[in-house]
Length: 478
Image 1 (cartoon, rainbow, N blue to C red):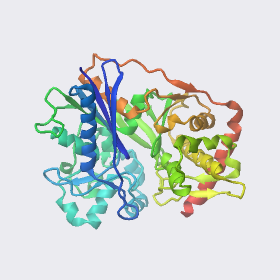
Image 2: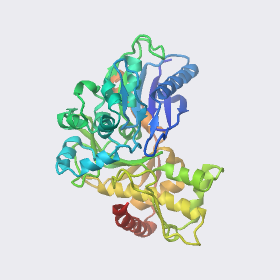
Image 3: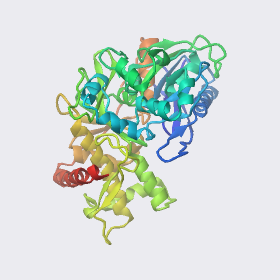
Image 4: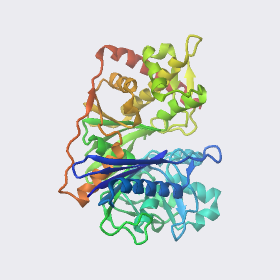
């Protein structure tokens, strides 16, 4: 049987999904891996463990479908950095997006009066998440490791190298390094000088649907009949997989982190440098902002704060018993520092207005509202051509009706739920199919739609204003 595999290399796990030629899901596989925090502000993962997770998932699908895939295409989290030697052997772990070791370097760059020009050319806000800053950190703090590095790559490039023998990266993931000129789609000399590296130490930039062939002796024993597409970032693939393909549709994802994104036909940059603009294909730009703090805020609350061992669904449902605004309790959700819209690595979470009347259900609702309020703040910061008409929702949170209704009611927009919760993996396979099997078209999905409740719009906007005022008052002092 001919089948096609979309692989999403995420922060907490790798997921692989096998589709047939009608777009039907034949099988799914998933394997998790830990994030190591060897020092404060360090967030690392073992790249070999992630490669093994990819291979494990492919083998699990093969056992179910009883064949090798005709196509493999990738989605991956952005901003990871791995230093490797001439043989492609890692000299470091994968330094992931939530790692803040380079916070001081990013802070120094933000003081540079030329920063606005750099932002207009790179399309990404200056932050410790950027491989640009992380590379400079290695140059300053671990010079021997830095000088031993032949290549500076991300996790998707590491996996692709082991399957194909090629060092390649797509434009969106390249832009997320802070090293790309988004106008020329080439590595930017000024940024390379900032990092202290050469373009020969970076992967070759290719289109996201660029097709490769497996290398002999690859760890999954793929033969030359299988196509491997370069793929792109999880955000870009989530937009594609959920059908959020134009300026009328706002894509919102809540997983470990959270993000707001929209695709436009022209590059638009925010004068306050709060949003990113990544090229994803000719004449298409992904504009948006990502937050460090999505469902992980609720996971922390359930496991660490309340040590609640009950079902997650039941824990979340408590929020529906509390009124909008959580009876005056407001949370700033910056548990892991923050990216958009405040771009402050050392930001902290705040519980404000707590009184003796507040219990666990209030805290749960306030945390859910905080994530949604932050997403609304990100959406307001985006340089949009016009107001979107609907929201496409994806990520684990689409299983939670209370959270989704909060989103619809605050934004006052209908929220469509992607029929396939794994939008990034689906997007990856749609991208690869376009190049490898253009004659095969997956049918459009039928999505559930939640309508906003106009009668609560004022209450939500009032609660958001309290959140916004609290953030503006406290963030400068963090």
